[in-house]
Each structure stands twice: as C-alpha cells, then as structure tokens.
Length: 232
Image (cartoon, rainbow, N blue to C red; front, side, top):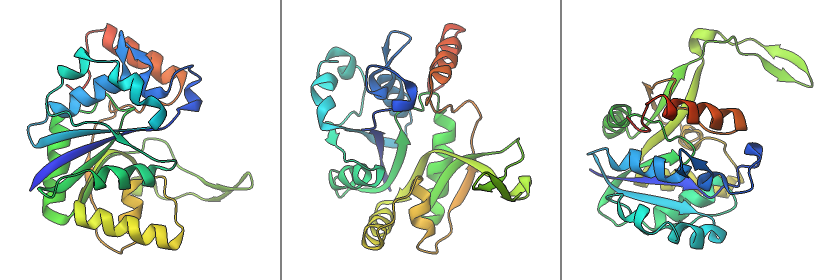
C-alpha cells in the first residue's frame, strides 16, 4: 500500500495573533510549514507529501523556491477549502490511483517523530484507520452552559494528534456521507467513526506539539534553540 501525506495548511491561525497565515509564521528562521513538510518527508513509508494551501497563499509558497527544492517527495500544492473537510477532499482528489493509504497531518505539528508516523501507518494498514493520541493527564469535564455535566473516567480519555491515517477509499466514503448529512467535524477520525468502523489508537508523544497560540510558538522556538530538531 503506497502512502501519501496531506499536510493541511489552509487555515488562517487567528488564535496565534500573527500577521501571516500560521503555516508561514517564522520558526527558527524559516516558515513553520517547511519544518512540517521536511519532517514527513523523512519517513521512508511516505512516498509523496502534498501541501494543501489556501488560494491566497500559493504565491507566498512558490516564493520559498530553493527551500522547497530541498524537500524530497514534495508534490505541487493543492488549493484547499473553507473547512478542514473541504481541504481533505481537495487533497484526496489530487492523489494518483497508486496511493491506497493517506496520512492527514496538521501543518502546525512540526515535531512529529518519524517512528510514531511509521507505527500509525502500520496500524492503518491492518485495520483501515488509525490515529496518534496521548493519554490525558488532567481530569476532563464535560461542560454545558458553564455547568459540569459529566466527568468521564480519565483512563478512557486520550488527546488526539496527527497524523491520522486512512485507507483512501474509506476516507472518501466518510467525507461523502458527512457532506450528505451536513456534518462538520473537528477531527478527521470523527468522520470514520460515523461509519461505525473501528479506529486504532497508537500512543504518540507529548512533544508532538500543535502550534496554536503565541505561547506554543515560543515553546517551539525554545525547543529548537535548545538543540531539538523538528521531526526527529
């Protein structure tokens, strides 16, 4: 099963409070997106890395020039949509028929480790869908109207990460059914859950940080300054 990676980078990242789209915010002197693309390109099992961008960012991406040429396996960018599901659909439409598995990854997660990506790909080969996740360490509360509704058992709660890996045909079916039902999901696996199918959970690493707010970016800068490499 050949594997392609879709790197979703069409969002604005308004919570970051930056003047640039989040994927192009500088991290250790180069755009965040470049760190993430390079991290996935290091994974032997991935044959193609496809950036999915907003149309407004295509020129900005092309201007990266030589930096892009240094990343192996990189495909031309695909124009994404307003919602995450629209971007996934566009990315899937751009894949050649040879790809039977797709890894969907957040552009804002540059520290994903290649070994974790390999393990979640292996799980998806076995069952059709798998995600990286980490057990939560805080007690979780379900809240409605500023009131606690429920406290789920902490040992049953995991925080989802990416990449989330799927059989291509399965993800296409899940997207089509979600569109027909008017469902907008915040998580890719959530779409497959609606089909009633099992999804494997592979324990990831807490260091697979999603850069969402300014303090996340500062932490990422500190990690790189201390000698840590993205995607290692």
